[in-house]
Length: 348
Image (cartoon, rainbow, N blue to C red; front, side, top):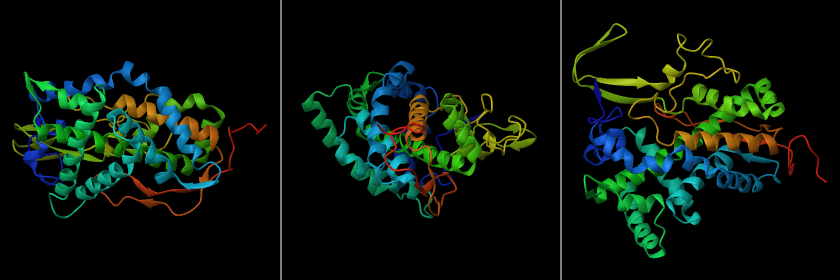
C-alpha cells in the first residue's frame, strides 16, 4: 500500500538530498530493505542487548556520580543526553572524548528537520563522512573488528561491499536515531513523572513497576510524532479515500493515544497493562532495530535515578524543543538531596 522511497518527512530533501537518504533503511522498501536491515539486525538481538546491561548500568552510575554531590542539575543535558550517546559511541568503538562531536551533529540534524529550507544537514554529513573514514582506518589498525563501524565497513549486500554513501548514511542513522529518541524519552519521561507525583512516589516505593512504567512513558511521551509514506495504489482507511501517489502522514503520537485502543488514553497511568503504543513504529518492516537497547537504557536510567535521586523535584522553567516532528526537551532543571547513595537509606 505505501512506500518510503519518496521520503519520510514533509519535504523529501528535508535533511539532505533524497538521492543520498535513499541509502538509509528508513527510505527503503522490500526486498532491498530486508537485505540491508540484516546488516545491523545481529547487533541488536535480545541476547546481544541483555549482555550490555552491566556496561549500561556502569555508565549510568558514572553519569549520576558527576552531579550527585551538587544537589541539582539540568536533567536533560546532565543525564538524558550523555548516557545514550555514551552507549552508542562505545558500541561504535569511537573514543569517549568524541561524544561532544556526536552531540553537536545530532543537534544540527534535528535543527535541519525543522528548518524552513531543505538540505540543512549537508555540511554535517560531510563532517561525519570525514570522521567515519578516520575511524575505519584507526579501528582497522587497532583490530576493533566487532565495533558497529567496522561491521558497516565490512558488510556486503548481494556479494558487494557497501559504497561510501551507503556506509555514511548507516553511520548517520546510528549517530542520530541511536541516541536522540532515547534521550528525548528519558527527559520527557522524567517530566511526566514530576507532573504526576503520585505515580513517581509509587515507583520509588516499588521499583519492580519500572519496566511497566517505561512502556507507559513510551506511549505517553511519543517522542517521534510522525513519518510520511507515499501510497502505491488507491486505498481507503477508516472511510478516508487515498489515491495512488498521495503522501500520507502517520501520526504516531495520535495512534498511541487512540481512545479506541487505550482506555483514558490522555491519562498517564503506570499501571496500564501492556499499553498499546507506536513508539518504535508499531511493528512491520520498519520496526525500530534498537527497541530492545532503548528499553534496557530507559529501565536502568529510571532504576538508578529513583534509587539515588529519589527526592528529585523541579527547580526551574522547562524548555521544550520547538519541533513538529520530535517531542523533546532542551532543559529540565531539577534539585535533589546531595550525595544520597541510595534512596531510603542513610550513609554509614
